[in-house]
Length: 253
Image (tube, rainbow, N blue to C red):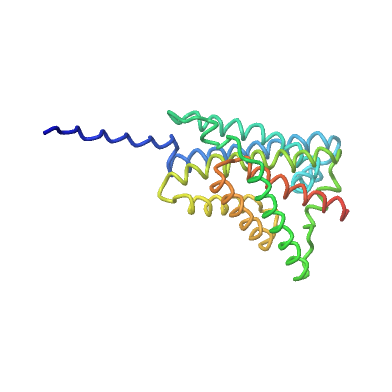
């Protein structure tokens, strides 16, 4: 009578290296602080350069209104994109065993998948705009109109809004924070909700209605990141939404 050796069980594949909840939170907080400090310094420098010859009172007024100055916002957004993305890369590389392209989900994604999510997002924007008009609110927020009118040159604002803001915000929120939180007790669904809340909190230039809209959009972007396994998809969605908003601001002005 012959016996067979029991088949050797295959080793479980190792989970990809990710920061957990606390590592993601602490490094995310550090990146957030540096983002705010860098943006503030950029605004201050811009105000000083633009305000040569102004009185101290006028300089203070210029700084207080910097968030609605299209030229200053453009420069600050592009600068913080570069520094912020560099900080995210640094944070990922601190994690032993982490692979940058895997951590940030920078692999290829089928074109049909991108088109599907672009269509879903366009439908969301359409419904959101129709709802906004139905309740008697302006589709283009007043601050956006002022931002576009004060941007010199205007193309710099287009670059900042369609490239700069989406690249940093998606790299940080859906590229770094979301996978780290998803690897913790929050799981992917909780990570999508938490990153949407944090992303909405970044947009304090909006009123409560606008922030809720940004939050819902954050849920959509987060779902796209989880479902497709790619950061390119929410980045494309974010860029499209900002393109639509910039076109609307240009037309309304």
